[in-house]
Image (cartoon, rainbow, N blue to C red; front, top):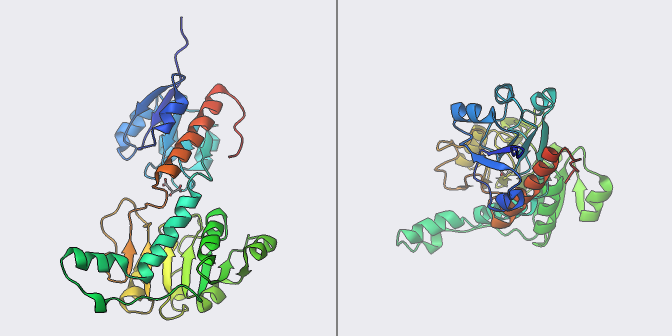
Length: 313
Ligand code: MLT
């Protein structure tokens, strides 16, 4: 008799590369991870669970499992997985920590430029058959000071890319290596100094209890007038209401925002403001990044199910 194959439960839309890696070694099942009752039922039979960012893998989910060995996050951020609850139940948690970092950095640059040149608003007028050339005037990036909040993998890639525009780079990151910062031509400063000096600010932090609400009304009161703020990291790092107030009152030049404190969402104080450019959490949404994320986590899942050592990616 044949051994039953391990069951891999895929709870969100993942790249086809995932299935290529799995081949016939596992039985793949699908569930909508945002449908709680369906998820709780399906996870009871699963040996592995694969998610992106929309599925909340919390203690309730772990309590519903009977044979789960591994949870895989096809991406970087683990803020939707309750890692201590996994550890308590002996479930391994893996992610794909480099899969989408280039895509995320590129999206931050895209939001910065789109905001600086008001591309979405200008596009909208022309789509409405209105030629409003004199209505739109932007700012150059060249010669400006760019503040990077969080000089980790994505922050560094962002810094390297924006450096090509002829910018002065400063960064706030209490954990950054001074040698690495110097190599990148980045001056490490305090958060207050960054807020006071930067013409553009881009956030590249994970969401943790320490970073949540890092930029609130108090911090936004310290920025340079006209600053453009980009967040393609996580919603809630910047207080959404405070940022919207600053944008509406013209205290900042604008904001480019890819992430929201609640997702998915169709309501935010940031929507409908002319100087705010928004996208629905698209930082990692490229064919290349999703392919890599899928392949990386599928490989780790197979190793975990075979009982092999799973190396850090
Ligand atoms: C991540 O943490 O990797 C990103 O938010 C992308 C995603 O959700 O897939």
